[in-house]
Length: 473
Ligand code: ADP
Ligand code: MG
Ligand code: MG
Image 1: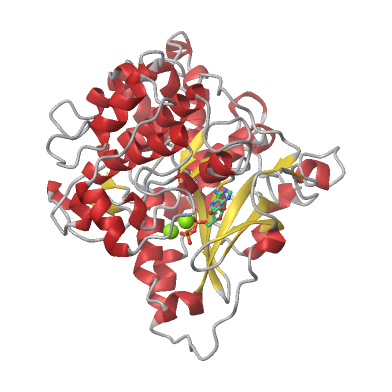
Image 2 (image 1 turned 60 degrees about the vertical axis):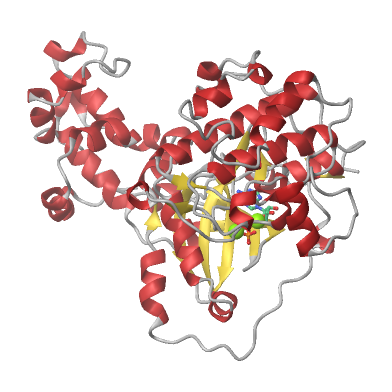
């Protein structure tokens, strides 16, 4: 059932040898002269935590600075987290005067270069969404592969999707979790707005539940995916974001078999701890309080986790048999009034876990009470999961996708994306495009530079603390 993947990644595609980088990669990432960084140096916020802890290149350069100082060298700065109070004092002020900070500004200038379609190579189509297609792409300068979600301007305008697209972009750019897709670039072309996201080559959970063998997944996988989703939801909820669209097709697998939550178009930030109202989501997965037009907080997401665990275990969704045709009214009635059925594929822990999450009254539901996410994590269903290690990404997934397989429907089966005629883009649309078109997102871009080896190869200094040479390639 699984087709062969002929394009493993950019390396193979470009005949091995290189790292998938363009031969012009050094020129693409060339540092501007330090005199061109002065304005940035004067305007950048001098915030220790952002400059030396959160931004990966900033952290590396601050480490290099500390290693260059005899009085700081012994501190093992790069590993310790309890030194920040000390380091943010005098050492930080010294750092700001050093060549390492000048180098940081040079990297920041490279990061701020405009991003266009020429920044990437484009490969096969990965899927199709409501406003356009999703393609595999590769950054020419570093060789890193991503997924590019294109939102066609005319489609968005016709269906009033602009606010939704901007919402998705603005939520994604503030997140940084191994359990949620990360946004590395946002840019525009003449026809579309593009979100460049972590590439998830292993297919979505819907495909794994229904298209490989008999419907459903084995218990170890159900538990592992549920635990990772739980961590992803926790990350969102800590930032007062409700996801609202939890369902198997929005949970994607990467090459190693880890999952990430994707498609944050319906996510919403609860401002000032207020509740929201709004009937959004996918009908079969909507919580009773969403259907009932009540105000809610994060409770629909825990309901969604209940639906997901049920569906992965049973090979069908809790309120609808596979292939059954239901009216919207009937679906709503079942969700609000009927109890789901548990067959013998459910262990007693799994059944209790689903029942607790699929509690109709959100005040009684697992995850929504005072214990919050800890209540979910400490349920006997997760007794074999070490959440500290899971959070650190060191647990081996129970299933690794075959790198030679394509875990999705044949691209031929995905309809060609039609173009909308008769929609004219106007100057007033530009304001929205400008808000969207912000280029590189700092943390993922810097991570890419380090991970792909570009940082190490380019970040050379002259001998013995001389000023960084203005390298010209
Ligand atoms: P929409 O918001 O329009 O539903 P999605 O974000 O769900 O769009 O993307 C549509 C499809 O594209 C998904 O169902 C999936 O097949 C594919 N896709 C989306 N994001 C990625 C990604 N990061 N990696 C791989 N495939 C993806
Ligand atoms: Mg989707
Ligand atoms: Mg969406």
